[in-house]
Length: 126
Image (cartoon, rainbow, N blue to C red; front, side):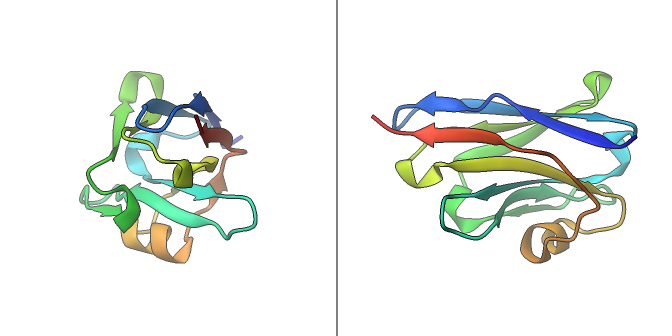
């Protein structure tokens, strides 16, 4: 059974950092395009950062460039979203997604994915 489980969310002050985790089971993340999305209350889902499996190309939303990065731990079949310099506008539920065919842009911009996690809440507030 294909499953993605996010963790690591919480309450952080503006300017702080968090690292989110996305653990996969039932498939090998090495061969999948992986992406992070977020949805704030009353707003639509938006792609945050996606990395293609085929060529490693990356799509970053403009609002996270220079602040968020993604990394992998292949041994744990887990990807991480490191978020720095957090702002109140970053408050949202963050979810990870995976797809074996989508490019990074197709995933982040068009929401092309076949597997989706339940999400973890990130709240940025003083």
